[in-house]
Image (cartoon, rainbow, N blue to C red):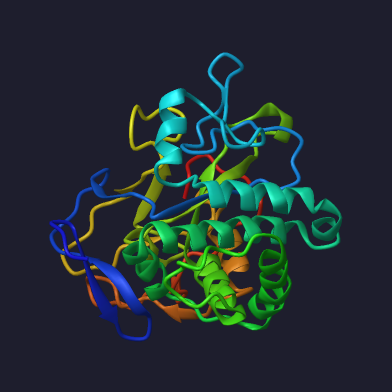
Length: 316
């Protein structure tokens, strides 16, 4: 990716990243990215639908309408339903989600996370059928399966194979190996679209949906980020599932642009403690005046999924 603001490059010791291609100012929007894949973060076995199944806006009793393909899936408007049926909500995907939901006893024996992973795999297989080129972008992102991915893939591949295998027109082999590879891409590249603030969770916010954003996935992590990302799911009139990345402070040309994968309203020490669970630390480069910096930088390379509920004032 190369634009007027950001340039993708290989960064020594950190892999691929995004750097400023010109001096950037605080508050400047440097990226607006649309998802190639979206899926609900709610468990399959959920008592009610509170978000549109296409754009994930919060549903109101006056705006929701039943889907013509399944009573389980509701939409914020007839236009949104029509758009979904033409793109993200095919008859196979709708049937697959319904069949997975109907096998509650099997899923209830597994971690809740696997219900969400099942949603992702079905959405990914649909993407392969609907847009093979975007599916190849998904496969090109960072992430190789580990033991946990392989274990989850064994269960989920068997489940999907028996209940709702993808059509034979799938352009890639439907296999255990593909499922494991996809789960790894999801774990390292998905961004969460946040629920509204709610008093029922003491000000905490949960994730309503996950999305794969092909350009934003190249931002590396820093416990002292120079940029922050926002979503406007309920307020944007269109393209409401886009994420917007703004600069926190001025940076010179050539400086790497980083996000914090953890909430920015956590203090620095807290973010470092969380990062230590899965990243490595290295000293920052010298300050502009040549003196050494005692601030530590987090050498992580891809967004990790956050816990299902996090304290967040701005989506990060």
